[in-house]
Every structure is written in structure tokens, then in C-alpha cells.
Image (cartoon, rainbow, N blue to C red; front, top):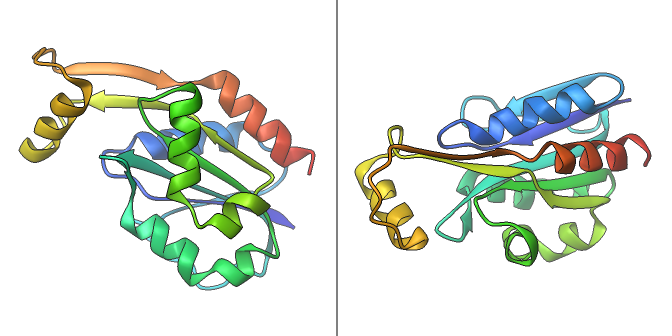
Length: 163
């Protein structure tokens, strides 16, 4: 059996997190970006990792929809949940808990945040406005990169590898 990483992304950082996870996982790993691909059959996977970014306190719509559409199947699998966000600690954990369906959150082997990146050069006007309001920043620095938290990636991968 293999592992599937399913993620949604807006600007690409959550995909970077998926690749970092892939490099730490044992065995065959498939990656699906919900922005450009779909998956119809989850039955061939023993472990499924679901990731998405948090924007304005919300998980990407396509990631939420994937969870809702496949909830029964996901509850029969070993599942890991991750988000990418600029928050850390308890604030990030609250975001994860609020992002995913409660039954899936409770059943997940691991749930964690893997880092965050804010790249104002890539962001659309409305997104830049929201980012500045949320961060309470009027700094015009074009790129603030918190990066991937490799300690979190390794801890996440270890939990999936050992379940």
C-alpha cells in the first residue's frame, strides 16, 4: 500500500510542504494538487495526507470539499492533516481544528502546521490588502518568508511512517 498526499494551494507554498513531506516518507508516495488534478479512487491508499493553506482564517474550498466528499472513505484510512499558515503554536493548532471536519480531525494520526510564506509580489491586490490587515502591517517589503518548518515536517512524516 502507498501514501497519497492531497493538497490545495493558491500561491504554491502548500505544494512545497507536500514535496518536503514526500522526501521524508517511506515507500511509494503519490501527490495530487487539487487545483489541477482530481482523484476518484482512494481505495489503493493505506495512508492519506491532506493539506491546505489558511487564508483569512479559512481552508481552501477545494480541500474542504475533498474532505466532505470523501469523508467516509477517509475515516477508514490512516490520515494526517496539515496546514500552511503564518501562525504558530496554539494559534495554528486552532486553525487546523477549525479547518477540517470534526470527525476527521479526531481520527487523524497527526495534525500539524508546516510553516508559512507570505509573498506579496505573487499576491493579488485583494489578497495583499487582507494580508496587511491581518498582519497589521503597512510594511511594503515585497517578500516575507517564514519558510517550511522542517522539524514539523520530520515529526509529521515520522508519525505517518510509524502508524
